[in-house]
Image (cartoon, rainbow, N blue to C red; front, side):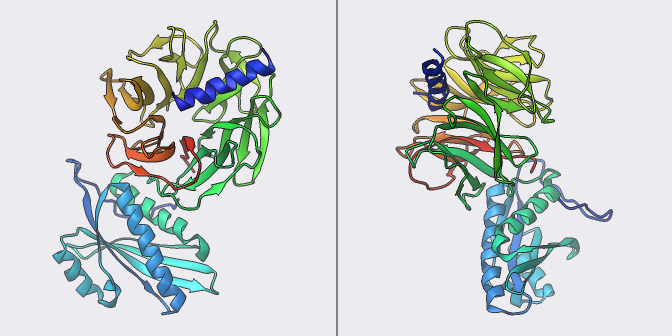
Length: 431
């Protein structure tokens, strides 16, 4: 059965029981990937331990491994690596990498100051012309070296594509290994897993606030399905909506000034427009239906949501003022629609051929594309900020876990190993 719908109708059921970057210089050089979709070939050299300290040599190895993994996961590059290439002089390096057929070389130096501060000087060279394309200095805590590597990857991606990479992003999700449902956070590459809530209560359906280190979610902390916002940076949370009855789930507009939530207010769960503090501005839908899973379009002018007004859960789109309602044509029970960052597609879950799988609705072409098939139940899709990847939950391993795939369904990888079952991922963006 659809796990996201279980969460939502569990909320409804329980409710009924309660209530019947850096600024670039003018001369910076930007590259471009091939228009045919082929990947650029990049050589990744060892980062030279500047002072030759043992700690710097270990850091050089770990830093390079992190950056190599980032470049591979970006799926923009064919990555070539060489051990101990820092022992070559620069001219020898150009010859070495030219023979490997790479286009650009990424290299740099590592310095550790007072055993705690890390300084990374990075350089990007064009192999054919042997010209320096870009250089910069990054610094921070040595314990936070992975984040510095992520920042460098994202800058390299931006110089090739013009768009920010996703290596600095994070994914939040629900896990039940404590026998309760709590919110967890992990880096996009599966590292730095940590638990955000320790309520021993039911917490469900987390969503990131755009351009903010905050997550909104529904919790039974006070024995009512209330809407909370959690500030991860400050480790503080507050209740946004505690209206008696259902307060869930919700989504913020791109400008963070308003949000759409499902509220029951003693009647059927419909959609309402709220301001950023949780005050109701107006009601958007009415009727004896369950309207849920809202998602804003990138323009902030429309929302997509799920409603059972057709007799079973289907996808609908309407303007943010509640007019111009229309249904997207699908063939099964649908759930969890999410608008792509570019606005041309909607990812969603649909029960088709007896199983739940991830699909895309191509809005310009008005056609449906299936992304998963034949590997357990696949649900809860959410987009990366660049629109190139989708995180989702899947039972393909025998239990529900979080996976990431390309927007075409390729390159599926499990995000993180954690006991218990994991659901409803949400991917940060704009941080």
